Length: 97
Image: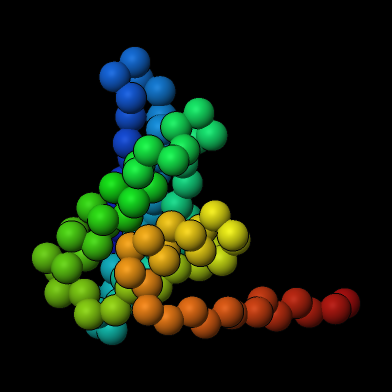
């Protein structure tokens, strides 16, 4: 399992966007667990840039499938803008004690 975290930083050193990328070399699957853009830097393509770099890195390692773990309205717009072809909502299981 590889972890390929990516961070975009402005010239002044401010964090602008990030993504946490996991790559499993057994299943050749990439998971984008968290992707975020600071509110002051949204709508500039930074989320798309960090995800694109994550896809490039995973592709060089042999990835054949990429998944995401967030389906908020903003996240969905980002994934759709990148050509996401399928959406499958996963529901968490919560044990009631």
